[in-house]
Image (cartoon, rainbow, N blue to C red; front, top):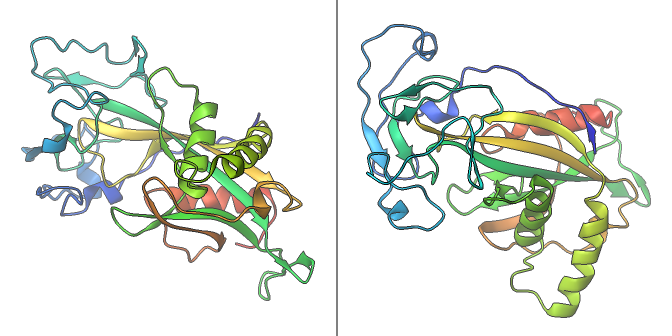
Length: 285
């Protein structure tokens, strides 16, 4: 797979909203200038851990559990605790978010202490009208569409991604998440599922890496955060994945081919990924 990486430090904002969106917790408000750990401030934020994490097989134990001895910054068995952002600090047994303070301690709703690795497949096709690419009237550039899902938890539109399972290859996650969320393969009939699986397997052999790093996600906390690999898979002719009917599945509420435009409002850092894809294909933005 070819690569078009974008590495950029950020001042995260979506993970500093006053109300933690997935539980009964309120963040301590902090300014942009107070986000970096090396800035000395009086800082005593509340702590939140979702009760739903207790005894879940995919989640870490509580940080003070006697038998929990994670190898932060290393591959810990089949759990990858290495950050794309480099070595992160550990304070009082807790990993510290490499992008700084969020106003909330603990791990929130996230299953892992430290980085939770995800994969975001950006599947694109051209918008076609009467057999030709549709051109935007302002930019005079062809309009690109991407497969977007509407999330159940917040109703925002997003790339159909998900977390990398322990021991799973990122390329496997990309295919699995796209199939589950955009084609409802968990529930569709066997014959149709087989056709789609064959098409996806071939289609996902070629892609471009758009981004690899930290995600400004509202679920992030001081001690748990999301990092992702975003890959673009483009159907130039619209005759492979682009021709199948989309069916929302797994944790997707809706799914559709969404026109790419700079005025879109998308979940977390997804708009920046979509912008990079539009520029890659010299499409309307």
